[in-house]
Image (tube, rainbow, N blue to C red; front, side):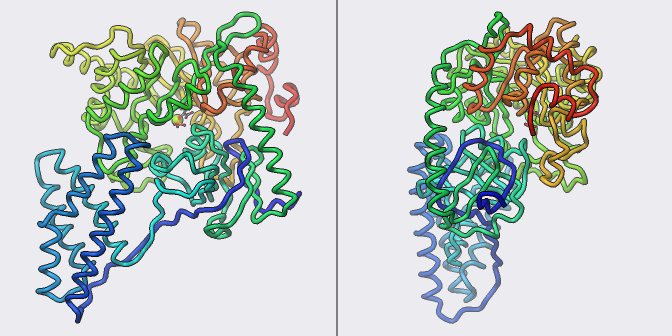
Length: 572
Ligand code: PEP
Ligand code: MG
C-alpha cells in the first residue's frame, strides 16, 4: 500500500493520533464444579477475591464521581455494600466448608439464588439491584479465576482503543482524557461507534476487518481518522510526518475558534441554525466549547443502554433537565427512544431478528411498550420547564404511527397537568424523516408536526437498501445518490409548504462537501457532531444562499452520483 500504510479502513472521525494500543477483548469463562481438598486455602482465596473486588470498586467509584457524577457513583457504593453482605459472603464460606466444592462454583450458585429472590420482588428498585449483583458476580469470579478485565475508567494516557466494535456504554464509561483514537473491525461512517467518536472529537477508523487480530496491547500505531489509514509500528519518518500533521491540525482548530460566537448566517442574510448532536449530558460541555447554537438531536437511547435495566422516570428527568438547563435558552431537541438496529439493550430480550434495522425498533417498539414510552414522555414533559424543549419521534413510517405517538403524548400531558405538575406551554413536537415512506408522504405528515428533521443516516440506508454497518457495501452508501437527494428536496419543499422548518441531523449535515448543497436545497437547520460545528459555521458565513440555490437547482434532473459530483466539482 502507498506510503507504507499497513491497513486501510473507513475514516469516520478526522484527526491524527499517535499512541499505544489497548485491545478490548470479551472475557469469557466457564464455571466448573470441582471437589477441593484444602478447604482453608479455598476459603481464603475466596475472601481475598472479595477484598480485591471491594478495592477495585472503591477505586472506580473515586473516578466515577469525577467523570460520571454522583448518581452513577452511588451504584458502586451499593455494589460494595453487597460484597459485605453476610447473606452472600458467609453463606458461600459455609457451603465451601460443608460441601468441599470450589469457591467460584459456590459463589455463583449462592449469588444467583439471591438474584432469583430479588427478581421476584414487587419493587422495581430491588429488581434493579438484581442486575447490579450480576455485575458483582462477574467481577468476583474474574478475580477468583485470575482473569484481568480492562477498566475503561482507568486507562494509560494516549491510548488507542482497538475493538471489534465499541458499544455506547463502553464509550460512555471510558476515561475520555486518555483515549486519543479508536480502531474497530466493523462499522461504517454512520455506525454508532463512529458517531460517538465524532461527538467526542476522537480520531477513528472503522471497518478495518481483522485489526483486533493484527494488533497486540502496547503496539505503537499512527492513525489518520480522515483518510482511514493505519500505520503499525511505523518508521521514524512516518512518526515525524504525522507529528507535523497533528500540529498543523491543532493550529487550524484554534483558528476555527474565531467562529465560536458567530451566528450561522449566510453572506446574503439567510439564517441557518448550526446545531450539535449529543448522546449524553456529558457531551454538552464539548458541544458548547465548539459554539453549537443548540441541540438538534439528543439521542436518548444512550441513557437506556448504559445500564442493566430500564432507567426510571426520575433517572431520565434528571438527565433531560440537566441538558435543558445547561443550554437554556438554546433549543434542545430530544428524540424519544430509538433502540434497535445497532443499538441493543442488554436487558431487553427481543430475540434475534433477520433484519434488525428493518425490525422491531424505535417508535415501533415504543408504540407496543406503552409503559416505557409513557415513562419517557412524562420525564420529558416534567423537564420541559427547565429550558427550551422540542420533542422528536424517530423512525416514523406512516401517518398512523405519528398520530398515535402524538395521542399518547397528549394523554400524558393531560394527566400531569391534572396532577398540578407544570409543563412548558411552548414544547414543539416534530418527527424525523428517516424512512422513504415518510419522505414520500411528507406533504401529509407536515400538517401534524411543528418541524421535520431528516435522519439521513437511515434515510440513505433505507432508500438504497445498504446496511449502514456493513463495511463491504459502503461504496453503495452514498449521500450524493440522486434518489436520496430527490427525497431530501421533496421533504424540504413539503415542509415549507406547511410553513414548518426542516432540519437534518444525520452525518450528512456536518459534511463540508454537502453543506453548500443542503443550504441551496433550502434546509433551515444543520445538526452535527460537535467537532464539525466550527467548520460548518465558517462555511455558512462565507456562502451566499441565492448562489447556492441556483447551483442546487441544477441537480434536479441528474441521474448518477458521478454526474452530480462532477457538476458540484467534488472529487473522489
Ligand atoms: C439518522 O438516522 O440520520 C439519525 C440521526 O439517527 P441515528 O443515527 O441515531 O440512527
Ligand atoms: Mg436514525
